[in-house]
Length: 341
Image (tube, rainbow, N blue to C red; front, top):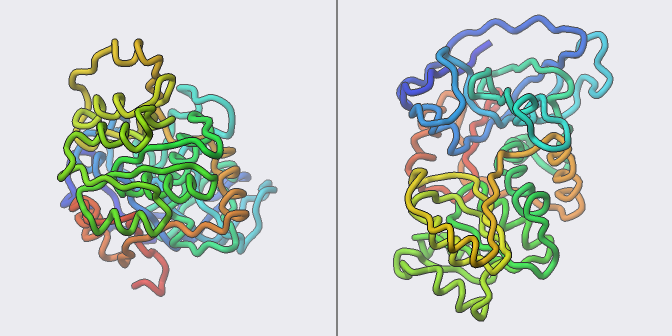
């Protein structure tokens, strides 16, 4: 089979298309023909050598992919040939709290991921995908979708009528916008592009702030919330946005830390957290149960995730470069199916 591989730190140019042998199925293994793979900022970090968990060997990149079951091991009970599935970001984290053991293996980091024609994983690592979603749409769920769900409703514990601030219009933020509005939350979103803010309003955003023309955007968040602040901030910026995000949260509010587009570190006044009884909560994607809970919500709410652009399998490098350009709104997907070549 054909697959891409990359070694951490080799940059996007290090992505190469190779021939790989298909692993022999063990009793509980499921072999899937991959139809679509979506990219995450994490994939850029791995290419650039800045991600927290990578090995020294070349691996098949990308955690997020969806496809069709083509063969099963002799003891498999969860799936049948022909089922439509997606892989769970952490193949060993089924439910409960994260631990070093159940999060020690993640796809596309130090272990082979999904950017291949076929993938073999233990049956517990696969999740059935909603019937109303295409493979391209379903491929966006495992990292971005589950991260947004965990941030808002599991770790964040938000309820209808609560408010959330979303930074930017990348994959997780747009996923969070769709989920939040379907759940009856008030959404404020930021971007440097008025065009993207208009698209966010079309998806239901209650307020939109251009952080280029309004650099002190935390003041605008407070104005929009009558001085109270939001219940939760989905913090993706890191060093460049964290202090403003803290100021945007209400007393007792939460900052769900999911990334650092501007880098990590920098000064943070602990008194801003202590005096406001605010908490920082690190979000490390989520478990298979969260994935399954999210799927049920998607079915009831009939949500279709926003896919910005789809690239063919041979255009994987172009897809990476497009994601790096930050021109996207929502998710960037690679079509691995025969029809996409």
